[in-house]
Length: 245
Image (cartoon, rainbow, N blue to C red; front, side, top):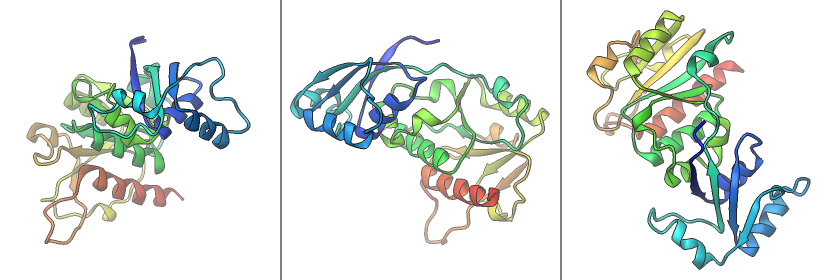
């Protein structure tokens, strides 16, 4: 386990980290008002039990978020990384798995927003290239709004070999490409599926797209060239979640 620690900011990011029994929270920095708010929202459980708490003014907390131009809302925490679960372990003995795979997506805000949507609509996990994942980003944790505590993130060394391996394990790979002629709502989403999203501007890498069994798109007004990656993902996740009900 990676024992290095890092800081996160924001009400939801810090509160959900405190709620997660698997997350080691080393220190929490709060204003008097944010402490009261924390207790109001969780009256039946002392989230600050066994945690070192330091009270600061909003101005004192600004140093933790000014560089990223973020609002800390009176909440800052120093946390450790979660224990990682491997993709191999996760897919063993599970059925009807839906995973999102991010090919070249690197923007922390987009990744955080996408994770928030994935948790909201019951996506089972995110596959991302290890060197592209900003795992200690305050921006990502803030954009995820606490959802980082409730998603399986599989950091892999190579996207292409991972997709190849998953295809051999009875996964279908669907690549999203706005040049495709088939809309994603026409797919009968059954079994194990990988939703492959490319980066904004560049889309999927050409070699990676070869591992897609199908290329599909989201139909949008032709006056707009494309959607933001996190918006695209949210639309797809919502549609698939409706199909499960």
